[in-house]
Structures are given as structure tokens and as C-alpha cells.
Amino acid sequence: MKKILFFSFITSFAITQVVSAQEKKADSGKFTAHNKGKYIVAFGGNRDGFTKSDIHFKGDNFNFTVSDAEAHDKPKGWQVDYINPTRFTIPQTNMKFGYFISDHYAVVLNIDHMKYIFAQNQTANVTGTIDLPDSDPGSVHNGTYNNTPVDFTDGTFLKFEHTNGLNYVHPEISRFDDLSKIFGIRNTDKFQLNITEGVGAGFLYPRTDATVLGERRHDEFHIAGYGVSAKAGLNFTFFKYFFIQTEIKGGYINMPDIEISYDTSEKASQHFLFFESIIYFGGVFKI
Image (cartoon, rainbow, N blue to C red; front, side, top):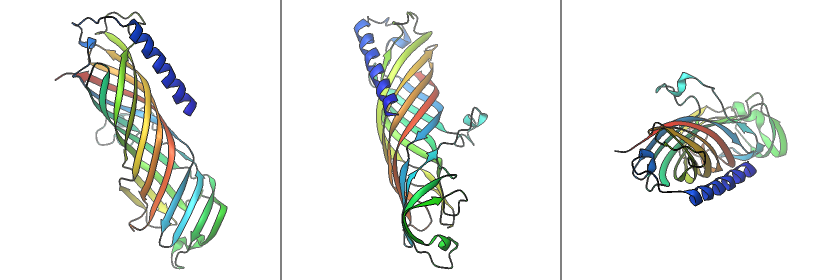
């Protein structure tokens, strides 16, 4: 993932330099000649990948870590849920709202609705202690664990998901450069090709679906931590006002305050790297 991001940004930088070297005075009569003062609105979908992470669970009667936990996303494929306002949070979606502060730079607010699912059919090592009351169904897992392999398949030990979702809300500074001249496109009001790069940082607002040691299922929204990210992409603008944008984005997420039950003393924490591939459909306009 690091190699892909590094290669993407090196390529983006090289192309940007070529564009800057070849750039001529734009036709001021074209809507696409200047970006300053334009607004951006876009909606799309994503696929996600996550590195393994150590997930730490802590409460009055337990304190343990699941090491190198594997997780995956939850793709839904192409379907009408993406445009159904009552169901659009079911698939993995992205929203973007931006404003161009200059011809090349825009300030953008992104809401990335990813989904993170702890892989249930895995065996991972657990370290720590569990000492639940004998009347508690989860007491079957009582004991001291020292890098002990645990099979999570039946879900009685742990079910853990950020499925509604792993919501990364972050402002971003994005740069746009017109590649149209390189490809011989003269009437950019009909079709324009841009390259875009950006960096952002924000907070994680997951709705974590957790059942720990057979306790009551918890599924509530909560600000759990922060993230930082970088992205690169291609923007295809057509008929002046409409665009399709593809992006790859990668970054770091740290959530030290994940709610796992209705007992506020019980928490989880984890940090990991993430990777997104995104496609947007949107519009650009002036007021």
C-alpha cells in the first residue's frame, strides 16, 4: 500500500511539473479556464483495505488484547441503495463538499463512510485476563491469556464491527491541474481532464457494533479518535458542470476511545493503516 501511494504521488508531481512547464494563457471566455470561486459537490462509493491491528479491550472484569486482528470491508456492489436517501448509509459511500480558493487549490470537507468488520473466521492470539462473575455467560472465557491462540469463529468471545460505519470526517486541501493540453483537448468546456492530489486530517465518528464476551450488543455513534490521509486521483469534467472523479486514498487511523457496551467504563482501542479506492459523481458551479 505504501509503495502504491508513493508511486502515485511521485507520478502526480511529475505530471504537474509537465503541465506547469507547458501551460499557456487560458481562454478567459471558457467556464473551465478558471476555478477560483467555484463550489464542488460530489457523492460516490468506495472499497477499503485495512492492515492488521492490536485491539485492546478493557473493563472492570477484563483487560485483554487481540493481537494482529484481521478485518475487511463490506461491499454491496452497484445498487439503488446509493441513491435512496433512506438507505444510502447501507453501502460504503463518500460525500464531498468543496470551494476553490484559487484556480489550483480547493478546501474540501470529506465524509468517508467505510465499513470495518473483524474477520470472524480467524484465530488470533490473546494476552490479558478475564474474570467475569460465574453468573455471567461470558465467564466460560475466564482465565489468564499469554499470547494464547483463540478461535473467534462462533462469536461467543467477540463480535466487533464499525459497520454504520467507520466514518472518517475530514477537511482536506486539494490541488487540481488541467491535463487537457497534454492530450490535445482544446474545448475544455466540453471535456476536461484534471489530476488532483490532497492531504487531510479529521475525526472518526464510528457506529461500533460490538458484542464482547457475550454481553449485551452495543451499537451507537461515538467520536472515537482521529485520522490523517493523503490522496491522488483523476477528474473527468464534462459539459462544464459535471464530473466523474476517481481517487486512491491512504492514511492512518487511531481510535483510543471506542464504546463497546452501555457501561461507560468498558472501552476498546486500536490503530491501523487504511486504503480506499473511490469513485465520485458530482458537479462544479458558481453562485
